[in-house]
Length: 122
Image (cartoon, rainbow, N blue to C red; front, side, top):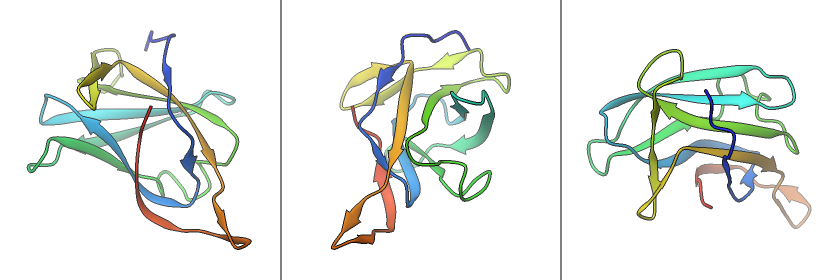
């Protein structure tokens, strides 16, 4: 994946269940998430929603603590399993090739908050 100028997304709460990413044209895509510090890449086989063409990934895979707070990740979608044929992701009518994301803890009254779904935003 040669996308070096990824758009930095707003921080994502670390205790989220599902990350709603955006919309894509193909019915089936692969979403790649790379830990920038370690280089480790997770590949998600994703089918877009039949209702609004959005794609999402579970934040419990590959394991619960993979998306650690204060670490940067690179996220992109692709038509092929190798991650080279980049599929643009649309958020609010703008096309993006890839994102840099960071997870942050969210606290309310000194308690960590668990969110079911969170939407990627820039």
